[in-house]
Amino acid sequence: MQTAECKPKMKESRLTRPQKRLVKTIVLQIVLVSLSFVFLFPFLWMLVTALKTPQELLHGIEKFFPDSPQWGNFVTAVTTVPFLMYLKNSLILVFFAVTGTLFSATLTAYAFAKLRWPGRDIFFVVMLATMMIPPQAILIPSYILYAHIGWLGTRLPLIVPYFFGGGAAFFIFLLRQFFKGIPNELMESAIVDGAGHLKIFIYLMLPLTKPALITVALITFMFVWNDYFGPLIFLSNPDHWTLALGLRAFETQFTGRYELMMAAAILVMSPTIVLFFVAQKHFIEGITFTGIKG
Amino acid sequence: MAKKTKDGSLTLLIKREKKVGFAFASPWLIGLAVFTAFPMLASFFLSFTRYDMVSSPRFIGLTNYRILFFSDNLFWTSLWNTLYHVMLAVPLGLIVGILLALLLNSRIRGIGVYRTIFYLPNVVSIVAMGLLWLWLFQPHFGLINQVLDPVYSLFNMDPIGWYRDASWSKFTIVLMGLWTAGGSMIIYLAQMQDIPKEYYEAAEIDGAGSLRRIYHITLPLMTPSIFFNFIMGIIAGFQVFAIAHIMTGGGPARSTYYFGYYLFDKMIMDHQMGSASAMAWVLLFVTLIITILALRLNRYVFYLGEQD
Image 1 (cartoon, rainbow over the protein chains, first blue to last red):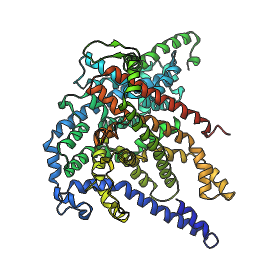
Image 2 (tube, one colour):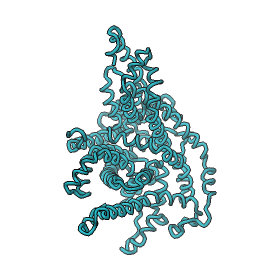
Image 3 (tube, each protein chain N blue to C red):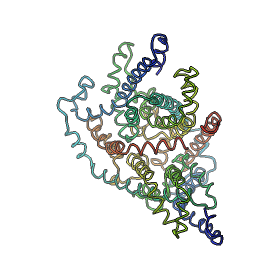
Image 4 (cartoon, one colour):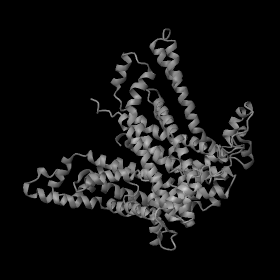
């Protein structure tokens, strides 16, 4: 950036405005391309590593590309651990978390945006404050509670809270803004026509907030798919392990076998990357929303 | 909204709305009580007890806190490690995020592509990221030390051990965290693009160069999102745990044994629920104090629209 600014300035007398702009654009593009290289290189390195033989790994950068790509590494990674079981477990948790979050976040957001009830504004502040509580402060008694009601060793601690707005504060906030943006006149005419709030909510509000609902579903998917902390604490039964936990176990099981680790890691992260590319707009809108309105 | 309907049904409607409001909010309200408020109160209570989940909790007053503060070196080690992490990771993350956003806040080609590239590391699972950086920072065959090899021989120094070296491990984790600085960049960028073009045009007419425009217009008007990312960064920074659990196991020599890690061990490994609860409340308290201190910076934050 600095070079982009200083260079044209020094030659101010000699360069015309369009020339200055051109120099600036070129310098900026060079900087951006090099930075992109830095950001993307780990991904590339991951891929070439996953295709190497253990011997080729030792040559490091001198042998950048493998002699013959070892696609078999992916097969080994998938077959030596119960990969499909981990996948199934991840999908189960994702399914319930997304359903639960959509259920509780939309209902609550509607209550905050369009209904008047005692304590609403105080509860809204409380909700925003819950975003700041370190999960550990809640975790210990929850853990004890789950132990007492026999939920430890089951998936329930990672499913049930989502249906009660667990971790949904941000989404409630996001959806509330969306609901608020829908004119009251629409609701009022529906009320005059005899529709109740449940009807208005289902047939009027939800269809109108579809983009926001997609954002909520996607971010929840991403979070649960990638979550490490929750499963680590609650999924004591290895039959319930998610891909994230399986991948961690992979590391201890195959110490030093970086080609297999990278192959497994690529498989685990590819769905989120594909999803991100497909639905980028929804992600970015959701993320920027918090920072600006919040 | 009920004003427009007939007078007779007005009170009825409002009454109904109260009930309906509670009904709609009830999943969250129940969740707040059962999964947030109750556990918080319970952990506060537990922090004054000795509880191993076998026998029932026994009230021991402030003993847990006293032991942590006055006779537990690991407590201070883990707290120091965490503070070190926060003090480095938060400012560096802010700077890199802002610089990336400033670079992208120009009208040149391919901005959308660059934005996607810089953001991409944020969608990678933390385990995959941990394994990747284990490999990149691997002291002997890892790419980073191979690239730095000429530098090492130039200065005649030993290769850096990164996460295997207690004096570098915390910094290594901060450094790799910068790979995800694109997350905050997205937020900065969105706010930058909300700044009215007229401001820049006026400044340009007055003869302000690009750097001065950034310093006097862009940065001040970005303060709300800088502030937001600052607070969120602090809160997240104090909870650092997973990456150490995946990459270093808290080592070497406890150098990445963060507060969250110690708490995790106390809770899951040792079942010292009382002491772990006390740690959770210390964490809550420290986070709260620092957040409040940070909130005092709020007066330096400009909000667009407030000034006109």
